[in-house]
Length: 171
Image (cartoon, rainbow, N blue to C red):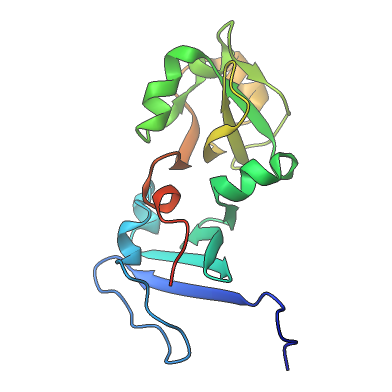
């Protein structure tokens, strides 16, 4: 038995093509959860899982990725993920959901704060900004990003102003 007032975890799974009705104990969201997040990898298309506490999304994942915190949770607890900072020229592209290219991470305004391996979840910050603007995972290690300096360095999966950002309360 769960004590009264104790936050409960609520997980919802949705298929992009055919939304699955939640179990009777869960109330359906007012909008299609399949529109909340548009997966970037073709292998993960079709299934999204969102973990909510008191109907507030805190973590999410697609079929083949680990759980990622939402940006709102990351803004409250910025130390939970490694940080990479892009230069000002990359900001508008990142906010539109584009992947982050290596030159955007190695240019004079950019900073690699933490050394990470390939396929590590990272928080993306912008030059001269306090809060993260995206979450993604590295396509190569930070050492390779510096040496190769071309191609996609980070695959973006969640950014400010996407569907998950706009819907901060699911009922």
